[in-house]
Length: 226
Length: 299
Image: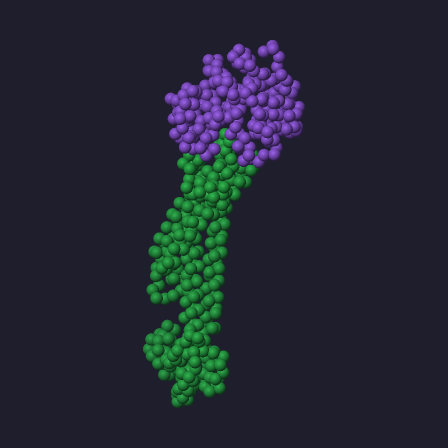
């Protein structure tokens, strides 16, 4: 579904990642872990085409990112839900409008305004009461849940989350994990970048997951020590 | 696809309009630039229309008439005048010809010498007004016959006056058109800068839109529609103000000149509708170009 093949990535003169290969198979649940600055966010950005590899190939749904123009890349991104650590909302829009943004930009504005799915999704994320609030008015947990709701509203095939529990307490992180596990059980492919080992352990107790660790610029499959 | 995109620009999409946050300074700049340029365009267009109108009038009115000037005094001049009128009456292509009376000649000189001029004391020629028919007379043939039979007569077909006037009116028309082009170019440049500034100020918004799968045409469309509507509104205001000033300009009555005739008449007023439409078109294409360039650089 998403594949990185012998990918390297450099910032300026320094090489951050080397010879990274990974395949996110349909319906799989992966964690990506490693120390801060190791390149977790960079790998997520390579998986979505936000960054282009210095060498190697990145593919999604059979399409090589290097061969796509910006508009084709946009169509690919509609099939990938992304949750950033800082959530990245449009602060002049309401929470409901932000969650519905993928529908709006895909020309499905009527669904975005009146759709039952939006109401159900907001209820699923526990944000019904905050629909008309502006993003700066939300708590950390509410922001993460809103970002997750936005990531899944188009019913994407893949969900990539960058430290989704980084700014929330343990109870809220469990709630977010539950939402992600439910999505995986619906057949969605999940990749979560995190350094929260407790979150990984909690997930492993519920579903089968694979843990990838970045060490020495390379990606390794983590062992049972986790 | 282009048709669908154009319809979306014209008809709008309330939700797409909201994805770009309102930006005060670029909105004001676009409104002011399009308003000011439309105001100037009204006068450039008025100049062009007035010069075309005057050129046409001078060309048709003066081309249809000629003046025969017969020098000399007393009976000799009267005889030559009578002979000239006879020749003119026999010449095909002349609708009518008549000798001007002393009162009419005095009236012609009045603007330069004042009323009460003692015409009889001056060695003035006799003037004969010739009105051409359609088709007109053969100028060269008439001139040769008059030279042979009325030696003191000089035929003036007004070409010496008409041609420079028509050429001057043509130059004024070209100046008006060049002004319109410069106004359009300046407006395009200002709106491009404003659109570029708005796109740069909204780099984060664009990043989020791309993150959720927005295509460049969608992002550009949101900016293009906003700038096009602002330019249209500003141009309507500027045109209305220009028309108001035109209407307040003093009229010189029956005297015909470029300055006193600056304005529109009849269906000519409809030309003014072109200004807001052109302003909106200029804004649309300028913003499209700016958006395309900025979105490419932000990728």
